[in-house]
Image (cartoon, rainbow, N blue to C red; front, side, top):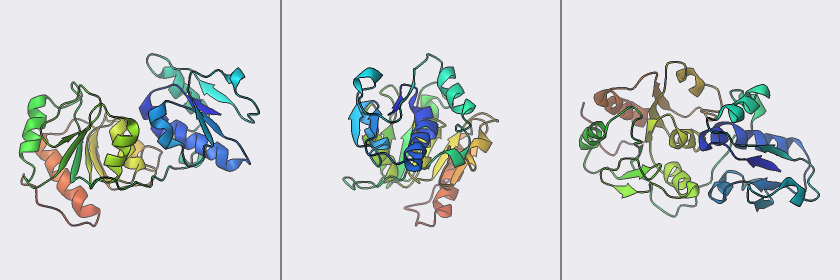
Length: 247
C-alpha cells in the first residue's frame, strides 16, 4: 500500500514514480493506495483500490507491501526518506507517469501559476499578461490565494482538474512548484525559475522525467525575459504559435 502524507511537489517528483516502480517490479493482485481523494489520478494506472490516508495500516488486510511516510511541517522527513533510498533525484528508481487526458476541455495557449511572494509581484504578472497576444486563451491554476488576471480561473480546484488543464495546454509558466512539476510529468513545455542549485534538477531527473522542452532560470527572470522564453518554448515544441509575443 503506497501511502503519502507529504507535500504535493515531492509526491509528484518522487513518491508516485517510486510507488509505480515498486508495483511494476512485483506481482501484486491487490494494490491499495492511501492518498488524498483529489490525487487518486496519480495512481489510477496501477491501483486496484483507494483508501483515505487516515486509514490505519491495521485495517488493511492481505496487503503484501505496506509503506507509509508521516507528514512533517517543513518537508524534511519526506525528502529525507526519498534521498535515503536514492529515489528523489534518480530516475532509474522511478517509473514515469503517463497521463491520458480525457479531453473534456479545449487546450489553453498558456497556463499560469502566480503565487504571491514567489518571484513576481502582482504588478509583474499584470504586465506579463498585458504583453501576451489578446487572442491567447489563458488558464490560472494553484492555490486560491494566487493572482489571476483574466482568462479562466482554476485556482483552488481539485488536483485532477489542474492536471487535465495543464496536460491539454500548450505551455505553463510560473515558479518551480507543483504546477510546473505537473507540466513536466504531463509532457507540457514550461518556463520556470528556481534557485541556482535547482536548475540542473530539471535535466535527466524526476523533476522532468520526459525531458520536455523547457526554459528554467536559476533566479527570478525579468518579465521581458520570460516572454522571450515563451516564444522559444513554442518554437521548440514544433507546434504552430497562435501568435507572436513582442519583447
